Length: 176
Image 1 (tube, rainbow, N blue to C red):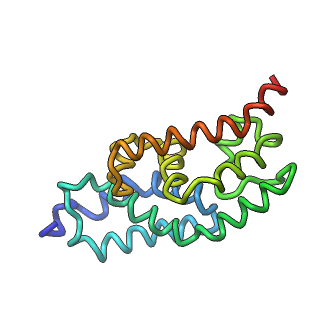
Image 2: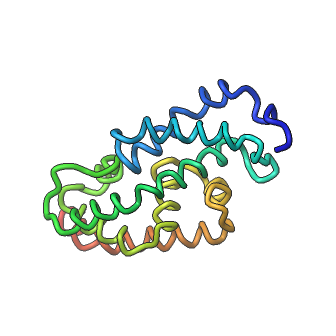
């Protein structure tokens, strides 16, 4: 972007996207860090406002790309939690907002398998499935956010869905 005003009023940008960015970040790193990281998204956006290129995507995809990069800084902590939960038979809590996902798949009994399956996929695959299933972005938006071809996004999401389905299939069959 050649002119910062291409983003419109920064206050309007903040008002329009803070809530959805906060929810995304909170689900990935937990509420303890979400406010700080969400504020950092907007701080980086302000500092880098001259780099925004509307031909590459909307302000929302640009902001989610910044958020995703910040969330990646917390990946080691997230992976340690997933490893611990994969060994734990009955989690007392769900890390970083996965509660919504867990509620849909009989959390208590299948969470170790879900956590283990998520550990088996790469960080970009996890980003794809989180942006799709938790944030609700479409394939094109995820592709822009993560700078991936749309076909790659589709195949990664499909692969992770299959892995998660296989991880919980026997358990859910027994519970039904």
